[in-house]
Image 1 (cartoon, rainbow, N blue to C red):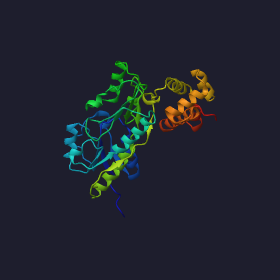
Image 2: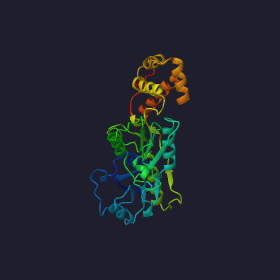
Image 3: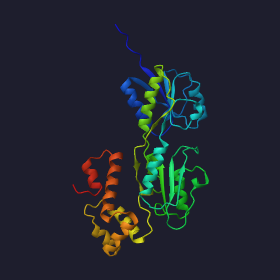
Image 4: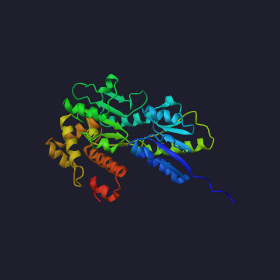
Length: 323
């Protein structure tokens, strides 16, 4: 009679508020009959003397935790590229893809950015938690990243407001990680590149499984691509120089949930001849007023599909689409 295989016990050594790490580890654990110890997420206490089979870690800059996982003498996989100095096998974010996705999102909102600065997640080269772009309206204003200093996206939002810089009219602020606790609670709700944190943890668990089975870490760490941009108010309005177009864009943003919103409504709001406004839209945005109404509705629907459990019908109604 074959003996039952012993269930492996894995420590999730992380105090990150991002539960995506837990979901990814838990999904792999359920598929492979692991027991995941996740107490550190809540009590932030290093379990000295803990005995198990492997560790999934997100060390960050907590040196005590770094020393613990390095000296554990069991297989460890780090979920991120922050602590490559530790020599621990890791699965990391794809920073090039994050930067590209963020740039594409911002470029959709202006044809002529004068300044773009990518901020390092912990002030380190090669990591990307936030992008702050200054629009071409008036003079270029330097953001903290321009001086080579790391500043959280919420600090940039606060600094802009304190200095009378309008978001997103003059400065668009785009973050990374899409943590709702931060993104929805700053003074101007923050658009953010959506990390695939669950995918990172799942792939890290798969690598840990291989290491526990005697495998060797890959020479090139696996990079996990982001899952899109969740748009909020901090990048919601396009940056344009034409005041009539800017006014029309603001009206569309406020009224797109109305199922009957039409080009005629937008034209009537601005009191500008329809032909003149249509021409200005094409000059500024290379699309029509109707195209812009549809674009805003589709983007809003996509955001709701990614972030809410609502039905497709309800999402369509909230996005202004007739059903």
